[in-house]
Length: 488
Image 1 (cartoon, one colour):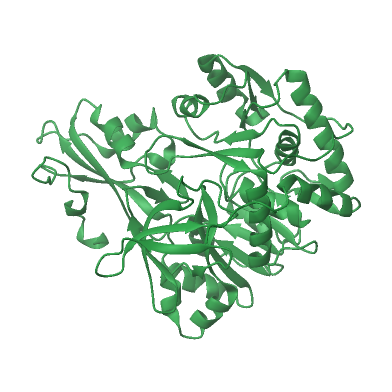
Image 2 (cartoon, rainbow, N blue to C red):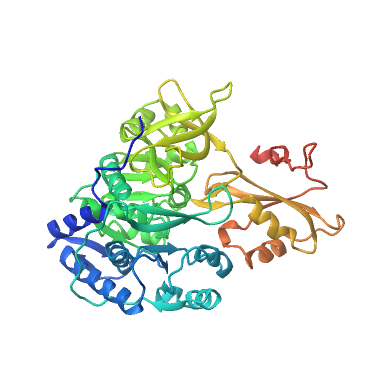
């Protein structure tokens, strides 16, 4: 059975309905801007102002608008305006370097580049490099909004993921598929008009903008904060947040600071990278009575599986093997293990109406390796490629290796991900020094890599070796790299 997205309401239609029914309710609050609380009517007027801004820039319909934006009310208004007028936004990470961002702009032909006051400097530098015009979005004016409507096959917004190639890959999020995702996610996370929702992931992530898109369509109040800190998390209590999302690195940070518990919280959604079962057990103990949900997926399609609140309750009661899984396929998804080996491990493939980027055969080829146990729970064992997921951010070893190899004191480099309770996977580099008697200092290599790589891609663990293990064809065997005993 091939699942089609036809018949699903467009996301913008769900948003229009939520704005109308929530005209007099607060739908958007800025956690870092006291007093900034927009009702549905106010958000609609700001969407009108965002539309006027896009009109003034001369950005024609049919073009994708790159935007260096963080989680702020103005950014959400810009996204809705773009989705309703055929000028979908492509949020990009201000944490990336100009060179990395330029790769994302390569397939976007819009003549402008949006940024916020906080990202204006890198926005101007990027605009100069790519021949675009920089437009800084401050406080949006109020204006009449256009009709919030779009065809099902139109693009709502565009995300970029580095995937398994190390190069940014564009993912166009269709209106109908996003509408289907909004319905699925709202059911799984119990979101409705009585919910107050906040996500900790960056705006350019599927866990950021994608999560807010779901909450807005459900008519929930969104609490936006642009940067995760322990203090920002604790501020959610005074704002009455009932539903929150966090990645394992954030959960670990909060547990270490003894700041995880939020009395107002009813449900916590987590995912985006591997989580240590020990960390999850500590989280469950820290917030008894809170429903935990793990939604597994990727930018190209999510959720694929769900470890439900009931699963977490069973795990807390003694069925701890469940915590080693990412749950069972959601009912709207058909999931298979492609070409399993003798242990049942193969590539996870899925299809469903809410998946953004299925392949020509209708299936999403995830690149994740996993197996289904006898109860139907999916256990992940790694990546078909070598992708490292550090704190929810994708790091491709080849990109890091090529950067390190350019250092004068480095003969060769190999990079792998190693288990880490704080960030899920830490980036570890194995270095063959050009002069074994005078190897470079890790601090020197770290600073060198940081000149061209985002901070999360820079290795945090280092090992100096005489040679790299290779197969008969000369290819480095990453699995044979000599890991320190402490992380084996």
